[in-house]
Amino acid sequence: MVLAELGGSISRALQRMNNAPTIDEKVLGELINEIARALLQADVDFKVVADMRSNIKKIVNLDDLAAGHNKRKIIQQAVFNELCKMLDAGKPSYTPKKGKPSVTMFVGLQGSCICWVQCSGKTTTCTKYAHYYQKKGWKPALVCADTFRAGAFDQLKQNATKAKIPFYGSYMESDPVKIALEGVERFKEENCDLIIVDTSGRHKQEAALFEEMRQVYEATKPDLVIFVMDSSIGQAAFNQAQAFKQSVSVGAVIVTKMDGHAKGGGALSAVAATKSPIIFIGTGEHMDEFEVFDVKPFVSRLLGMGDWSGFMDKIQDVVPMDQQPELLQKLSEGQFTLRIMYEQFQNLLKMGPIGQVFSMIPGFSSELMPKGHEKESQAKIKRYMTMMDSMTNEELDSTNPKIMTESRMMRIARGAGRPMIEVMDMLDEYKRLAKVWGKMKGLKIPKRGDMSALSRNMNVQHMSKVLPPNMLKQIGGMGGLQSLMKQMGSSKDMMGGMFGGGGDR
Image (cartoon, rainbow, N blue to C red; front, side, top):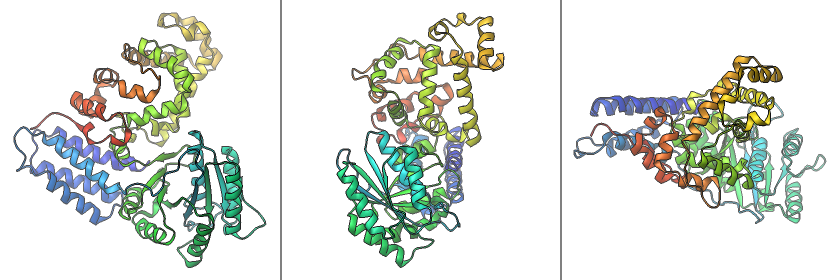
């Protein structure tokens, strides 16, 4: 994701400050200038950046700080808070509730390119939104009320079929209001609890677009209107978000294409400036490349500080409830077999793009895993799994690494069609993970056996053992880790305490 470059630039600026022997006005000025330069390069509005500079200087008055204050921590906290403030537009006007029928209407502009796919990705985003809730046990449905763009219904039908989501539309009917009303009524009768109506876009903001949206809005009476916007327009997002918000009571925004545009930072900050809450961001073309936008965890991940609670929630999404107690019991006993490694690789691949998953781990900067490396890592995991498919039950379930003799490794290599050195590489990875897993021995397991409760029960000692030394240092040592653990009960509350760090007073 291009925003990782922004996060990397700010992280490096903070690290340089941390490495300075003393904190004075010169060090503070250089830090603020570097952060401002990075934000401007990400297309954030000049006035927004100027306000941020001014606010940090007001908060961090070195002359007024009494002796004994941790200047580094105060500065880091101020930077974190100002980034959150810049991107925070409040909460959406409505939040769907499982089991209670609700109607969500999607609006947006069609891109300027001449193709059958909307450049803003609105129709694809409708399906991603439905798929996100479907995975959480909802019963979503899609209605195509876009009669303006050739191929709109075909695209929605194709996406919905692939995601196994019921849909409604028509090749014959040209009245979008009639289609929308019929679709909503049908899915209400079928007890769907999230009915998503996709409306027509245009190449520009025009009276016909807004009038059609108003008519569909009046007919379907949606609980929530979501504006889908392409991040590549940068600061121009302000005018677009404002116009749609005033015309059709937009209650939330989804920003797409955050994976490949340097203007993404400008788009996010511009939308936030209109006080239009951003609820999701699209980070790629695939169905799972779709993230909840929650400001504090987002900024935390942007700066390489992770979102541990979100990571544990993702594990909970892919590990069936009936398997969780058994997995957690093995975790507490410090057991780690090749079979467990295989199962965890399976879970990792289900959790979505590897770069997104790793960015939730405290201390792991998303900048360390560019797009090409993500694919390479995923391919390596699949190769490891292929090798393990060639193992016997005895080999998979043993906790004794000495069982893997040279003859066994040669047999596994032949069966998997891989070189012997790759089998040795896979076993080295197993030993490394087993060492980490062993440090979890004695962890108190929650009675409910769920991953979220586990994250709350993990204490500072366990986390300090598990995290590599460089990650522990990056989040501020034991002091920073202790602050992080206090916030771990809820990803919404995870914030600047994780920066921690001793040093200059």
